Image (cartoon, rainbow, N blue to C red; front, side, top):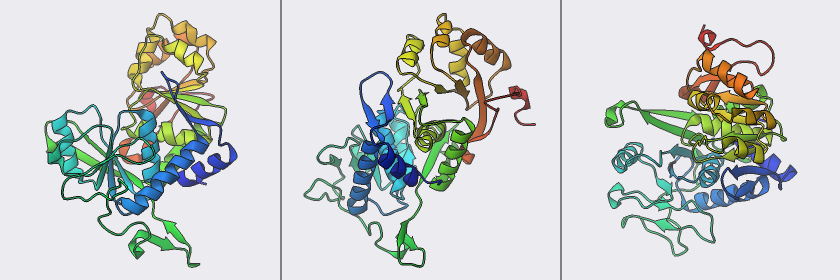
Length: 345
């Protein structure tokens, strides 16, 4: 079963009380049962009042738990998520919105009126909080009025298998990025189909041997595909738990990892290097860690060796690219490993 919808449905039924997501430095968490219910609620609301399937919805949300709910709901509903960096300067955000032209922005902050796009608060309360330009009507219930056919409204929105049963079109993610944020012309756009995301996430989970007993830790921004696929979706596939942090902090790191009973870390070379130099690195030996995953950039062999010597925790090197949905290749979690210089040979 390689489907985000399927994974969420199975875990929501079989282990509704199992924690799926937990914040690293707070008391909030979301179980599989709660996540399934929230995603269904978002899906119904988007079908009734949001853009049609395959419409673009931008996500501009700082809180990782809120982001995760919205991200999964957009994928499951057959729409296209366009995550935006919440720390980007206002001028850059305006350029990004003008470029991708989303039908809706789910955001936890007010956008300038000049953006001219409908806005939806990510928090699931008794009703959504909607802000809309004058030209976009809002219904009496507080929802954004639909600007066209909703899900299942036309043949383009759904397909059948010959039996008359309708199947929702696949969602996806539109990634944006730039080597020079001051130059809009340098910005690239990459679309990843939901099926591709699920395939890579399942491959990562199997390769890393993730199970329902595993507890991951992710300090990486969820706007990046690595955190989305190797973090959120690989954990969803395995049925385990993922601890989400807003940013990496070395102070008190190992105490936090021990308290959350973390078994694997989704990291990058700079984090591995900082932890290798941490005077408290030996505390890792008292934790449940199976491995630290390194991705997004080459990991120098001396850094890998220093980290493993200081912590006693193996590093699992992975390499990939955004266009492939994150991971392409990885060292084996068991047995012989090749250093980074061999990764592309």
